[in-house]
Every structure is written in structure tokens, then in C-alpha cells.
Amino acid sequence: MVSAVISDASCLIILSEIGSLHLLFEAYGRVVTTPTVAQEFGMELPEWVSIRSPVAVPNFPPSIDPGEASAIALALETPNCILIVDEKTARNYAIRLGLEITGTLGVVVKAKLNGAVPSIKPIVEAVRQKGFRFSAAVEAEAYRQAGEVER
Image (cartoon, rainbow, N blue to C red):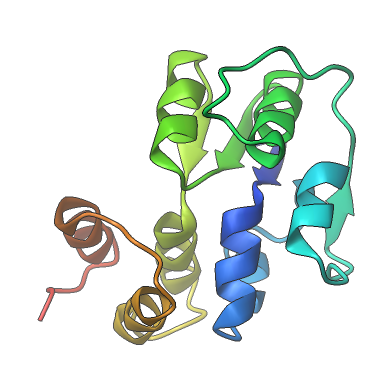
């Protein structure tokens, strides 16, 4: 059973920018983030996002930004959690540390599977139009998991 869902800033920012932050709630309900991520987000967080500080933030590689580092540190301290992180270096690092991860497209897929949206396609397109990059393989996998055929 998942004990917590911890989000880095990228998912919060991109979903907010396209007017779809509610999909994070539709996917997971309550979400946790860190003070560093909240500061990166730069706006008031919805009431369903709680802020928790990690006990310690280890010295991560310099390619991991402070928000990602704080979210990874909190995830390491939180058994059975899911970490939402999009940046490839941070994702790979979190996986090497044994963390369960997903990304913004994974959140959108889960929201669709929970009945929040009929299709992920308009959301994927809106995310792309905001300059969010993901590989063709990641996009195809999102459509597959959502039960949609990419058009």
C-alpha cells in the first residue's frame, strides 16, 4: 500500500500552467511536497498538498537540483511512497536508490484510469505546447497505459 505520494516541482508547475492541477488530486488524492519544491512552485498550493521537510538532504550529484534533491530525500525517508519526478537525471538517480517513481504523464494516465478525463490526448498536447519534453517512447507508453491508441 502506498503511504504517500511526493511531488517534485515539475508536475505541479506544468499541470498548473495548463489549468489541470486538479488531475494530481484526481490521481492520488493527498500529495506531499517539500518547502524547497513549494518555493520553486511559487504559488499557493491547494489544500490537498501538504508540505513536509526531509530530516536531511544528502549530498546528491550537482545535476540534481535542490527541489529534486529535497523530494528524493523525503522519499528516501518515507517507506512505500511514490515519487513524482520528471527530469531524466533525477528519475534515474531515484531509481538507482530503489524509489518507486512516476512522472507527469503517469499522473495524467492515472487520473484518466480513475475516470477524471475521457482521454489523455488533449492534456498530452497541452503539456507539449508548454515546452515540456518527453520521448516518443514515453508518450507511446502513456497512451498504451491509458488504453488509447496514439493518433
